[in-house]
Image 1: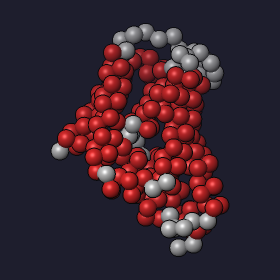
Image 2 (image 1 turned 90 degrees about the vertical axis):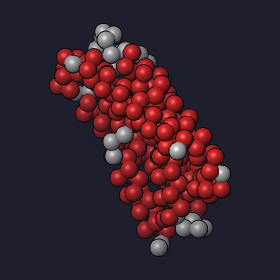
Image 3 (image 1 turned 120 degrees about the vertical axis):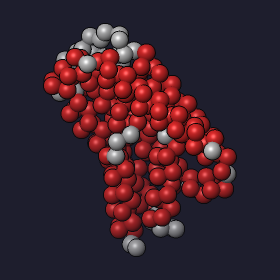
Length: 209
């Protein structure tokens, strides 16, 4: 496999993974609807930075480390699961709190930095994402890749992750989705919180087993 084909294969596989629904999708969609488009885009940037972190770790041999130290993978699962449970409870508890919805195209919200931090933490707390990155790199990256491949991968992965979630942010911050959210805020927040918490409990249960 040539370096160019390997690069395109890695990016294609990660793009498929990025668009698959999961905790990151739930967080960006809810942030965009409930807070503001700006906060949704900040969350999308957080997802992109998280992807770059996983890319860097995979280039440094994350797959080999997890294989050599199984306890580390278990610890990642437990830590990630507990964070998702916390996030789910946080969203559930705020289900009945009223919000002031800013203009869909711009500012307001509770702070783009906070949305960015929540998104980055959510991305990094998912051990399955770490395993996906590590496995894809181990399977498709040449043993001694050219320097240009290693240089192209991080910005390309950032573009895929941040680009996809930016589309999610723009779509879910439009008028109709926001109006539908405001009509059913309590139920939607409870559902989103339950999904987050259930995913966290599942991760912890898998680690215990």
